Image (cartoon, rainbow, N blue to C red; front, side, top):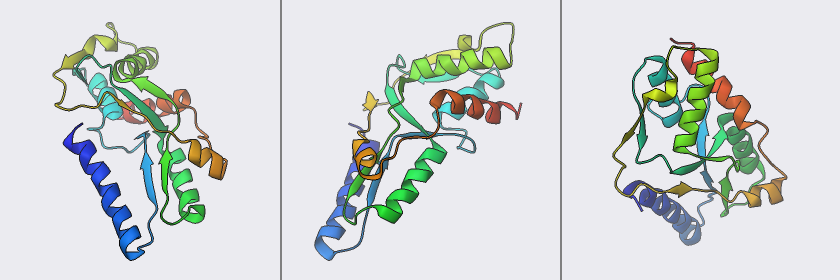
Length: 175
């Protein structure tokens, strides 16, 4: 629905056209949202953590009902390496973890964890502020990762709940 989504889809079509037309060896990989240490602090999860630690408002688009599937970055790297070694030229692979959560639930979850690790007089969730939604903002990004499970017998190694705590500690240790 958005220019961002359209550009991602069109890039897949362009790459596939080079494979079909010229035999250029390609493997297309699409992945759900990554999270973990060292991610740019402007991305959603680091933004929640760093803003909370600085006592700044935590911006959430619309009502926060957008749903995203989150995969820990090391799981993404692991399956990408497997696909690069064993994947078939000309194929597309979708990488996901089936760990979907709405943006508002994720924001509140991170705030609850921060409340336990770094308690303050007021809950961090008080910092959540709803902002105008982006035009064309997609409601749900979902990935059907059954192909990588079937072809490579792969599933994520890392638990979202464990790694979100590790990620929170990584970013919050700076403050």
